[in-house]
Length: 449
Ligand code: ADP
Image (cartoon, rainbow, N blue to C red; front, side):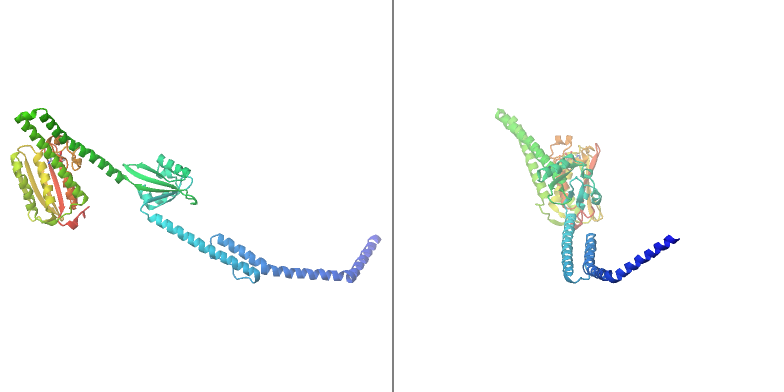
């Protein structure tokens, strides 16, 4: 017990000594430190409110702008140089906002222009996926254009040569052109242009449906081939007549006359064909403008029938007319319509064997007058029937009858020029009926279609 009391006294003595020292020597030091701490705290608070807070606020605003809230600004304006910095920051944010607005307006305008373009446009990314497709592209490829975006091009156009052209356009850095064949004999011309600096757009494709152009080219080639063929036959016949006459037949008057009449018939065919071709091209090109006038249907029909009655009687054919009472007059081109009727009746005369009959009847329904030309002739094979209105089309047996194959094509164009139609029904060995329908008034043209 004695020991610890001594220690306690010693300790108390040390504390007393220390207190005395603090009270005398260290007090100013402590006061100085305390003062320094207070000054530091005040300074920190000042720096924090005038510098750090505005900077943190600016950082926060910058983050919000980056996050898409473009109208954010540093407010309230801090004072002093930090305020200048905030002003500069706000100006930068303002011009950035204007730049972004202008760019997005340009983008929207470009997309609107591409979307409303009649040309089909597709943009591809560098992996050949569709980054953009307009409505026309969707229509052309029979897909919803919105569904095409993000999918590989090959899903919409599985044509190897198109994909190959995309790659070679990028490799060569120049546009490439290919024609892709689609189902149902449709042809698309595809122009692929590489885009340099187009962001995610690496190539631009423009597609055109050239099926009609191809079809027209095909028809034109067929037409030229047909015309050449049809002209060559009578020309060759005339040439051989001349050769035969030259070779001595001219000395024999009877033979010479016979050959000359054959040449004459061939030349008649040639002249008829050239005239029909000219007539067809004039109607088709619109060069022959229609002279509309009110035509009484019964008069029109009897005019046409009278031109052929003699020929029909010579072939032992009866020909009758049956026009429904109160059939209204039609506004049409007299010459064109009469020659169409003559063409149809002449065919009936040509393709109906002796003893047969022909009836020309007319009726009106819903503002359309239909003239039916029916015969009890040889009829038309079902495989030929859909093609008889094509130029130069002749059923095989008809080739022997020496027609040009242009008559029904002219009738079809005449009907269409009046806004009407021509149809044929036929039963092989029993006869045919051709129905020519013309609207009563020209303004009704095609309204029923
Ligand atoms: P064509 O000068 O050969 O008569 P068309 O164009 O007038 O030319 O007729 C085309 C083909 O249609 C004819 O070759 C014939 O085969 C067939 N045809 C037209 N009208 C008749 C008809 N009334 N009866 C049978 N066949 C017909």
